[in-house]
Length: 182
Image 1 (cartoon, rainbow, N blue to C red):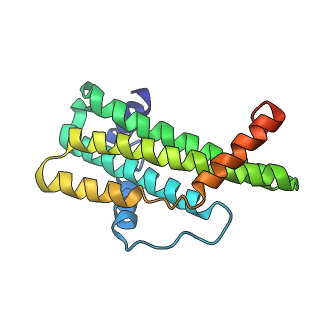
Image 2: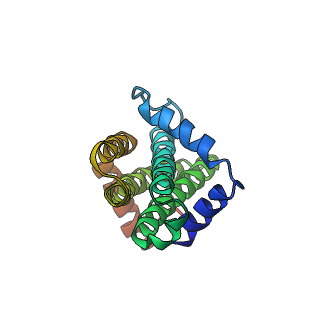
Image 3: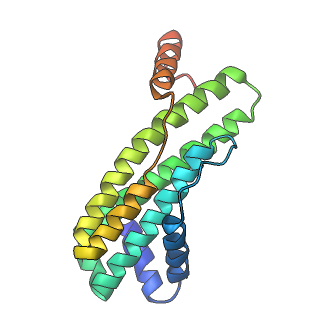
């Protein structure tokens, strides 16, 4: 609860330009869907950007609805915290995989790509659930419908090859008798 509570308090005090970022996020989530960039981890980076945008839109909606009493809305803050934590974990996973990919070890690169795909799929599931929970706590009527539409758009992730990735990680784990990437 501390994560979104602190962020929102600072925004209400004018210490963070949250309103500007929320408007940018609304614009990105409202824009037509595009294909992920053709770069390593492009789909995962696009998912991360979208989930961060969903967090910003939901946080802004929560502030708009509850104003200074946002700190009293523990369920809302917990749902937002779950979404923020999921975004942080996904970003950490992507950054770690990029670092491993740059090491020159082909097997570690292949396994880090598989691990990132598996993790991104699970993060998408968890973050979308947290975002939907927050939306139902915050919105009603047309506002709720708009929030849920944005969440649906933000949670798109084509996890093509997910089963192969899981099997690749499982085989490497059995072979090494530990998680294979580290």
